[in-house]
Image (cartoon, rainbow, N blue to C red; front, top):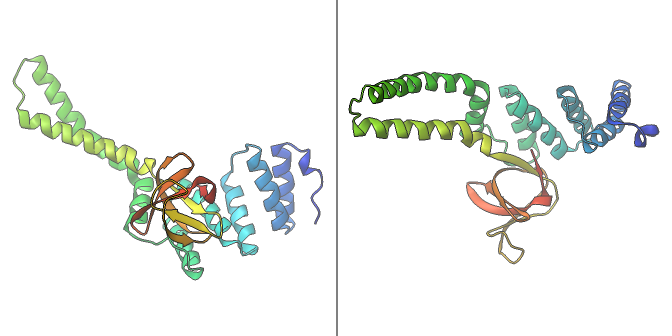
Length: 227
């Protein structure tokens, strides 16, 4: 089915047209319009993400399918979605989607992190109030207590910020070079294909520092769809 007025339509109208096409069974055409709306700055809704995943699954475009499932998973951590991505990846010899300790920790953190944070804050608030009272009454504070409080605050800071500071991405090209340093002259350790998931631990110039099979490498930014 030919696409018509989408080039002149705003994002909302484009999405309306895409919804109509998807409902009529033209999922591939709908996916093009959804992508156009996203490129125009529209934020993907949960139904849109699932429709895009369905459309790319119908086209057997596994990297795009996993990309949109991963975005949905980041919003709504669910064991069933994690296992589905793992099954798809295993069937297509793709790495990074394993149901390992790291992914389950991330799943646990996203689902229960707020409750655990509140649980950690309760004893922290109590200890802090005791120290404030001692200070107010001009009572001596044991040096070990100060170190314990400092250690607790550092752990709390890591718990709050570390998981959120780790991004993930999916390789977007058929030949992605993993280099030992962020330079085109650096040795290439491995060449991987499209659709693999990598954890992003930082960037330098046009390169992303990624964790791949427990080793750190550098990949050009334009070779990765950042989640």
